[in-house]
Image 1 (tube, rainbow, N blue to C red):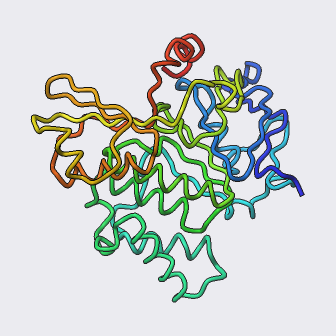
Image 2: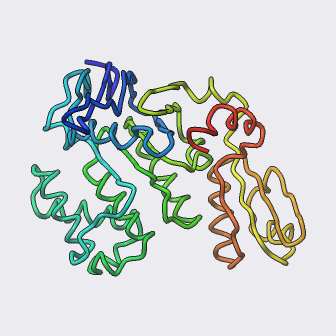
Length: 316
């Protein structure tokens, strides 16, 4: 039994763009492996090969050369039921209700469950993403943020060992991004392998373990985060816009104080070393109806020169 959930070995993908021309390689010699209990972020400019890589893993395309292994054996059609996929855009049938789309999905992906068990699964998932009260609402009537939550539910409800998330933070407000980070982190701790494609590197850095960079169809980097960005700590920053006395608000919250408070007129930036503490403050300020400017998962200032030097032409 392989220790890896997923392995790509010498994978190439070519397309014949013209009958009179040679094959054009979209992916060239991709070699990478993905452990359980880990999160890998894939970076790359548009056209770098990220979507083609995902389609190969999902079985929508087949490699021109090389092999893909799932849990130690060649990837097959049956393995697709052990993979969850969250696409970049909410491509959902608008006339179905929230509950209906999850029911049809579980009917296909969880055939061993009876009707009652599937209904329980759906209820628990909708409670998790705070959409149970909207279970009868049509997909076309949902906000973009709600649609992203449904996409997450479809990707994760069958508890797959591999989750592929394409721009999971797109269209989410700060509170939604906080929830998404929590859901991803919880899945990772359940010995799952998570692969994320995103341009919002600062959001995903606290929970990712490996960074993979594609450029023009080639893998130019595949390295553990701790070796690549040694100065990064799990520092989260919350930026507010308020005339309120921020120190008085913090005292009233009865929460542990932030590690740093920076005030610049109406703009207040709070830094945290503890992720859960930052989430507690986020909820507190939302309840207080304080205007939030941003909620970032890392302060990348120490690593900005490194990131610009290595990733500017690829992702930034």
